[in-house]
Length: 146
Image (cartoon, rainbow, N blue to C red; front, side):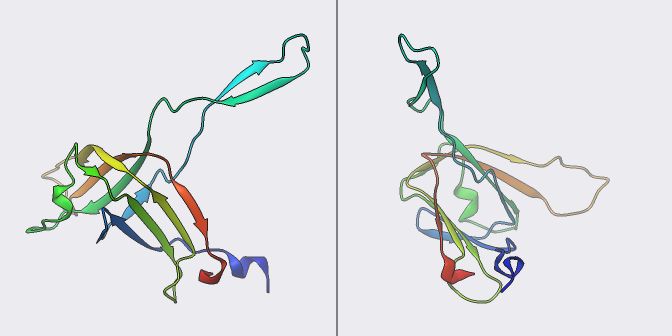
């Protein structure tokens, strides 16, 4: 089988916030960062050690969706909403129910939301962006889901 046949497609995904599956049109900023401090070894100028620094800031995840009239669940994602049950994002294959990859954070809090520019001269979907600061994402790759 060619390597190209094993590439995960990113078109289907599921988002679960605080145990509730919600629909989003776009997920961005799926990343994990770690800061290091460089320490030169005393007496030996050719050796450097990297020590993990305590976390100075939280990573941010951005979710986008089109606003629908009468919706209740996603509109409760206001600034300050805590996600104590965590965040789960599953990348799903085109066919099948086993996720190709799963990204999880144990905790998160909504730090910002905004709505795109309102323009009376343009017709289209009204998009809302929700920014969630989280405790760090862990990644699980499932070869059975490919």
